[in-house]
Amino acid sequence: MPTEPPPPAAEPRVAPGAPLAPGVSAEVADAHVHLFPPRVFEAIWRWFDEHAWHVEYPLYAEQVVEFLRARGVSRMIALHYSHRPGMARVLNRFVADVAARSPEVVPVATVLPGEPDADEILAEALGPLGLRGVKLHCHVQRLSPDDPRLEPVFRRASEAGVPVVIHSGRAPCLGGYGVDVRTLCGAERTRRVLQRWPKLKLVVPHLGADEVLEHFAMLDEFENLWLDTTMALASYFEAPPDPALLVRHADRLLYGSDFPNLPYAWDTELAWLRAHLPPDALAKILGGTAAALFTP
Image 1 (cartoon, rainbow, N blue to C red):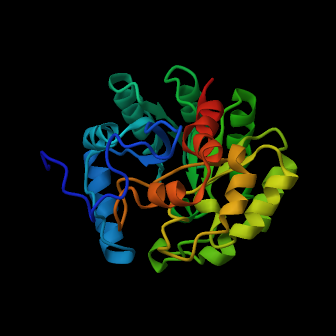
Image 2: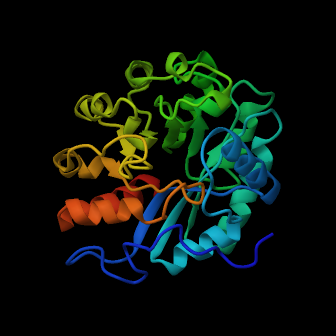
């Protein structure tokens, strides 16, 4: 296990403690941070090395929190996901324990839809453990956002009033998932969920890539849809969208990094936001929207 965080993948474009823009605090909320137990993190990093990209920040959970805290991130929405039965309860208890020691961490639950005791697992997570949302990953969990197995999850989240963060967009389309992601996911499947569950608070990461414009259009149609910016502003998969779209929808967008599983410098998207958005939109995307959505 490393004892010190590695140096940045590239020279940081937003220095620790520096203002992000005139009138905007350097403190931000990162709505897409991954926290896993050490052995799970190590398995994920091996998978990324084989199927995706080299992870520049192989940091364990406590190091992730320390790294981001030192760089002005004051709130971290902690996400994880389960890919086999029996795993979710362990992950939920792990992230609850990290949050108990680190007040910056806002812990979110996971569950493998259809696994034995799935509803009891979520009941514990959103009840006694006090977790503040539910994370699902269609690619990893090999299910569509409109899969019937998700109905109990959406029902319990709606009743609890907590958001569901669901990777339901098609990107990245990687063969390592073992499924045809383009068939499994997509904006129209997400639309069906929003139509069926109008009170469900749904967050789609990556601005819905690779159907970014389709997801932005749905923001006008569904009041309980949010998007996070994770990896969509780094020019890693495709060019970022028109900044005017982000300004127009700033109260429905959340800054997210995907830290620590990044192939580039951790602050790449912060630099893009700083360069392209006015202070009022920055204040919402970098913290205000997330604070409202994940605060009970």
